[in-house]
Amino acid sequence: MRSPLNPSTNQSVLLPASQQFLIPPFARYRFTVLFILATGFGWFLIWFVLRSMQDPLMPARALERGLLSALVTGLVSGLVVSAMQWLVLRQYLADWLWIVAGTAGYVLLTVSLEAWWGWIGVLTNASGVVDLFETLPPAAVVFAAGGLRVLLTALCAIWLGLTQWLFLRQYTRSNLWWMGVPSIAVLLSSSFTFLSVLLLSAGIRLPLETSILAAGILGTTQAIALCALKKKTVDLTLRDYTSPLVVAPEILDHDLVKSLARQLQRRINSAWTSEHLNDDALTYLVGVTQNGAIAAYTPVNSPAVEQLDQIPLPELTDADQIKRSSNIEPLARFEVIFLPSGSLQVNAWLGIPLTWVAVSMLTVVLALSAIAAYSMPHSSLNLQ
Image (cartoon, rainbow, N blue to C red; front, top):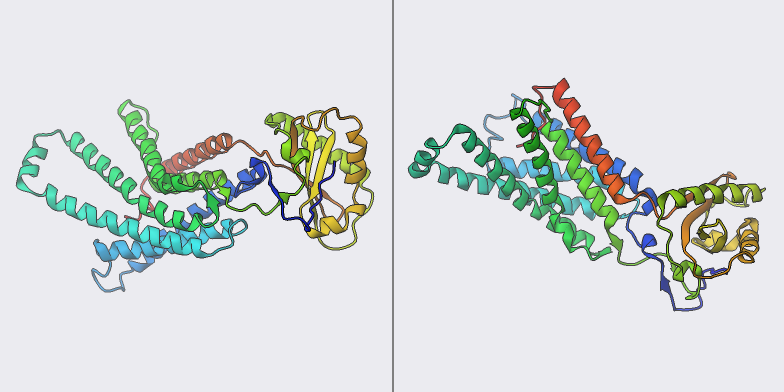
């Protein structure tokens, strides 16, 4: 059963869930790696810019700690990090207002954190509080101060989540939870730092470079959250309500899908004997059964509709339909791209599970943070 796009009808059916994500599932791993690198590089640029602004030639006390310093830090941080992230995100969200949203969030975060911390500093200098602290062990005071700092940072990070959510809500749905993503990143990175301290007290030395840890975890949590968002409007819709691409369940066995992708690529390559006529890539959504039969396909772009006779998908599908016993058996869905060069790309829409991506990225971030702490024990990129 073929299901080409039919512009003459207004009826449409949303594609299965895997085709509705903001970041295509098959692009998750690459997107996450690039997003983390962009965030980390942005933090390095922030450190470099703010350090240059503290040059001895500048007027004394120009950037002394206070609300002005927090404002400058937030402005520079937001512009640099958000711009770096947008270079990766623009392939999926071309709107540059992501930079504006991130900048506003960072400014609100740093200014509100500085204001709260200043107020707490005044409170803790009161004679009664000072007397109380003197009765406590020094370690307890340090732990309480650190915990309070983490809690305040997590609360203030909601500003960043809020401003980015105001941007994302225009393009994605069911996204209110995004407001808590930066706060989760703060708590997660602080938890790993606290674990490192506990291990040290137990005689196990595992130092972590806090800036690399914070930047890596922020990039990881935001990238994973972006991969979990679903688009408000889906570019590709199907007009055939009975197409297997619409009604068939999705094959969720990741290893089976990978095997079917290799099998599909071999079959099409062996049947595709010539290059197509123009310079446009021909993109199709293809459904394959667990036995490897091609159940259905639909063109994704206009050149794919116009040059359907130049590719082997119609013949392969017609041949496989004779072998199929049911139109609603589970399918693995693939993006198949015929390139003008004569090469073929097959991307599995199921993609790598987000849990796998998150665990692997967190492991890499922790490893890099530990390596940096061992190799540069006295260095720090902290911005506050």
